[in-house]
Image 1 (cartoon, rainbow, N blue to C red):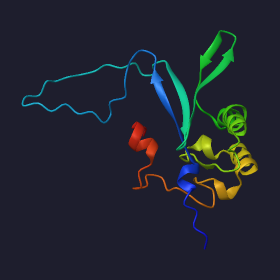
Image 2: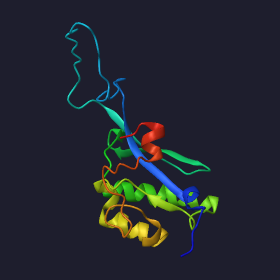
Image 3: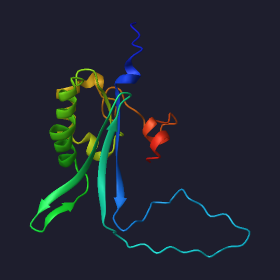
Image 4: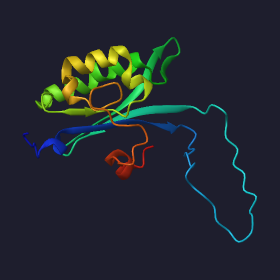
Length: 161
């Protein structure tokens, strides 16, 4: 067995995050501790305007941000991430930048396994550019289990969940 000590340098950690345009911050992990109950209530709109941003990083560089947007009759609108949009982002934004840097052949791609990340079209693109051996994700030979106790840098360093 050959041991490759450089593999941690070649992993591309990536994820999306929502940023609410009204200034709200997702505080589902924040708690208020007090001697007396402050009866604090925060009102939020059911569907606040938001922008979804993708970013990836390796040991040597950061790629992104990429904003998921769609051109409509009313102009540019924010949109949700679908398999088609995720594939288009990888093809038109991420992979072209890896090729410019000359590192595409070394990258081990590690998406988090969300449904758009394992869409059939996305899987075909990942296999075409990275092969099965260089993708660590659900529905690939090397899977990263959901809710794994092994914390990833994107969760530890950036607080993305």
